[in-house]
Image (cartoon, rainbow, N blue to C red; front, side):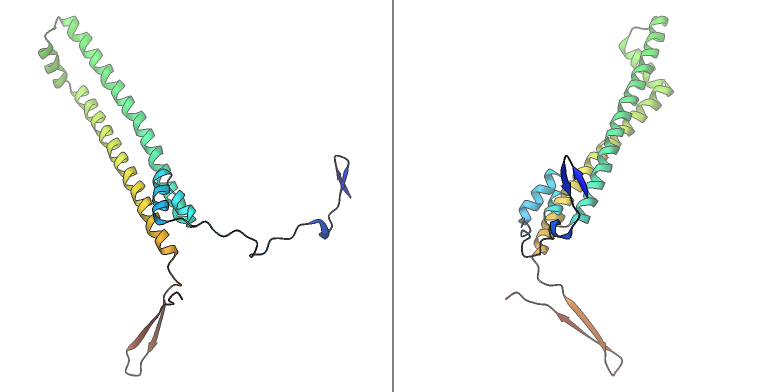
Amino acid sequence: MLSFAGAPLSATAQEVPAAPDSATLPAPITVSPRGAFLRSLAVPGWGHAAIGSYTRGGFYVAVQSANVFTLLRTRMRVGEAQDRVRLREGILRARLEAEGVTDPEEIQTRFDDDPALTELRGLLDSRKDQQEDLVALGLFFLFLSGADAYVSAHLARFPEPLELEASPLSDGGFEIGVRLRLPN
């Protein structure tokens, strides 16, 4: 016999509670299609989880998580590219000041003619474009998740699945039958 804090414990079958039967389990929560849509907009996958479509909900959570991670990483890279552009401009500005160039138009012309600065500006522009693409992709998947949850909530109330039957005919063709149970 085991004891815990002075109280004896026994492992008899009489003390183990029985598993509840299906009659005592609470009914599943019903979510309207609009509610599933709004939940999926608030938190990706929540609308699917509310209607019991856990695999689809997990897919949208994974896609949005990967997108957010990539977006954050791209934000860091945009910041690094901006720092590199500012550093190169600072170096060029110091060189031009040492040469005695103070005309803003001349400075801008020299900036535009510098191949390293042009390359860094191109890198910065491409990183900003990538950031915009990731934001658009995230919004696309957010609304796709909501629309999918909306449709899935409608289909959750659909009657039993269709049954297709195909049987060969004597003349070599096929006969196809469809069965659909209609609600009472």
